[in-house]
Amino acid sequence: MTIYISRDAAAKACGAEELVAAVRAEAAKRGQDVTIIRNGSRGMVWLEPLLEVATPAGRTGFGMVGADDVPSLFDANFGDHPKAVGLVEEIPFFKNQTRLTFARCGRTDPLSMLEYEAEGGLKGLRRALQLTGAEIVKEVTDSGLRGRGGAGFPTGIKWKTVHEAQADQKYIVCNADEGDSATFADRMIMEGDPFVLIEGMAIAGVAVGATKGYVYIRSEYPDAIKVMDDALKIARATGLLGRTLLGSDRAFDMEVRVGAGAYVCGEETSLLNSLEGKRGIVRAKPPLPALQGFMGKPTVVNNVISLATIPVIMDRGAAFYRDFGLGRSRGTIPLQIAGNVKYGGLYETAFGLTLGEIVNDIGGGTFSGRPVKAVQVGGPLGAYFPTSLFDTPFGYEEFAGKDGLIGHAGLTIFDDRADMLKMARFAMEFCAIESCGKCTPCRIGAVRGVETVDRIAAGDPSAMPILKDLCHTMKLGSLCALGGFTPYPVMSAVTHFPDDFARSKEAAE
Image (cartoon, rainbow, N blue to C red; front, side, top):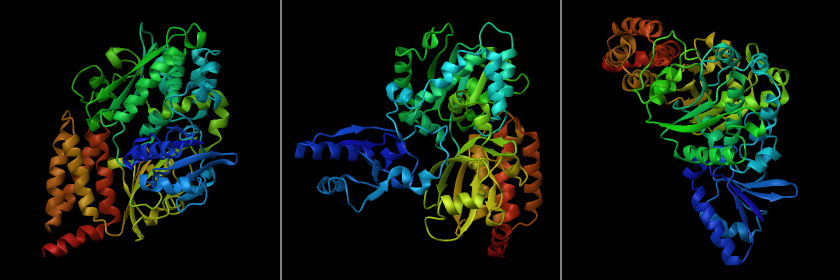
């Protein structure tokens, strides 16, 4: 009997390690031969720990399994049981996805190179090694891939700049400093399919002429750090990294660097400063990192999902990837659904679903069963969308047109009990705490923002114009997105939920 239990951090937080120990103990007690494979997560977090059993018909699952359930599972021979959820890949949440970047995540042993290759791994790199750097860059450009870390900048344009730059050394830097609320896609890839990130970075290196790469991971991700370190050792031993990539004359190697947990280091220039051993503060642009990045050399800085998608594009072609999506938002996006929601988890799909379809049809509405009041899209710097905007298609320009942003595609759902004035205050407080201090609009503006929201809460209506003016200054004057995007949650709360601000005045009176 082969049993799959996720090694993903979310599964562990729900009791996966205790479940593994219980299965091993029960199998030994009954004298049964059981093989346990620690796969990545399928992304259906509400079912974790999810135990899967290999059968001729496919892998059948048992959801939210605790150690106490193990004896009864063995008694039922892993068949008819209250925790049974049927064939895992037939669960609607999973079946209806378009899994490209996450095709292997949750299905394979993340540290098995044999399984990685058997499931299509390395095809993209092998094709890339037959092309020139310019041809690879063109393929990525033609695919329409945009940065999945939040900015949405065309990946091919960034690569072209680094490819054409003249330098004795170039670098690939992977931004794995995933710090937004309701985001966990980067972590899932690193823990569940690390070789796809390594392959993507190797392809990037071949494309632009870089021979060295770094994965900058936040310290709060110990499981991802461990899996990536182990995967790098395996990659070097099997020829995926080193002086001769898969036996070719191309060289590329990489290593993991761990950040200290500063939110602002998710911004690429702060990250580069931290990577160089300096304080993580924002650099003024120009020069762009593509020309003067890590150690002053031309550097590609992409996030995990952008780089992990490259092998798919190189394997199946730009046209295949570009056929998914809408408008200028091409390909698929890993939606990360969290907060007060019934079915929280990762859902990879083509751009274009409406926000209402994501929240109500995929997420199943609120966990509490109460009406949805707001959805924050794009992390702590994202705008709050009311249900009146639920017809907005999920796309970069479509959200920008509603004064919002997609960011890293994390969605936090709130029911009708949420106080949006308090959420606006939280946005300013978060910015004040996490500011690197480099620019005045962010460093001082966020502190003044907290004070101004408190004045509104105390019933001072004259503070509202000050808050709006302050947000305008922060948006236009901040050096990076931390100060520049903090006005999004604040002003969206003011615009779409005015009653929450008026009630504060009434309470004061």
